[in-house]
Length: 276
Image 1 (cartoon, helix red, strand yellow):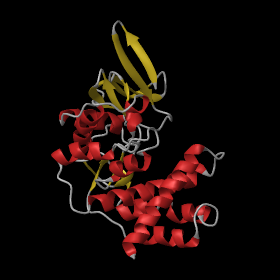
Image 2 (cartoon, rainbow, N blue to C red):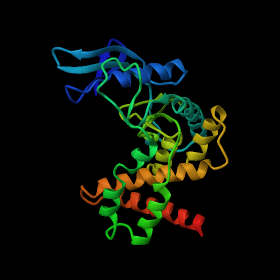
Image 3 (cartoon, rainbow, N blue to C red):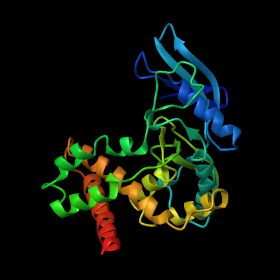
C-alpha cells in the first residue's frame, strides 16, 4: 500500500503482491459497498494488469481521520461504533458465491467467488492440523474435544461478504465523527456473523473497555439479530481464534499469543458450560 498526495488530496495505491493475483474482486467489492451507502474508500482508478509493473493496481480515496484503536473511550465512541455497525451489516448483506478467501484469479471480478463450496469445508480446512499443533502445548485434550464438537457439525446455506479482519484499527473517525471502514484486502465469503466473531475475539485487546455491544446496536438497526446471535458470534470467535493461535506458534512467544490463548480458553469454557 502506497500513500499518494496530489495537491490537497490523498489517495492510496494498492499493487497486487503476485503477477497472477487480480485486484478486480476487491475493486468490485468497494463498488458494491459504496452503492449500498457504506463509507468505504472509493476506487478512482483500476488497472487489471499494468504492463510496466506486471501487477494489478488499484487507486482509492482516503478515509479521513484515525482508527479508533488509537484513541480513548469518550462520549463519541458509542455513536461512532453504532454507525460502523450499520455499515458492517450492509457489508455482510452482500452475497458471495462460496466460502473462504475470495478468489483472486478473476480479471474482471464481476462475481465475488470464494474457494469452498460449503461453510463446513471452509471451517474444517485447517482444523485438524491446528488442533494437533495446539493439543498438549496450548490446549488440554478435553478442550480440544470441546472445539471439535463446536465446529465439526457447523454449516450455513448462504455465504456473505466478510471484511475478514475487522477490529478497531479499521474503523476510522475524525473530530469525533465516524468516517468509514478501511482495508478490504482480506475479504472472504462466510456466515453472516464472521466479522462480528472476529471483532469479539479482539474486543478488549486494544483497550480495556468492551465495545462490541455498541457495534451490535447499529448492526441490529439494519439487520435484526436472531435469538441465538451471541452463540453464533462466539462460535466464529472460537474458529478464528483457534486458527490465529495455531499460526502464532510459528513465531516467537508474545503478549498477543497470551491474549489469544486466554480468550480462546474463555470461549471454550463458555461452550462447556452451555453443554452441561
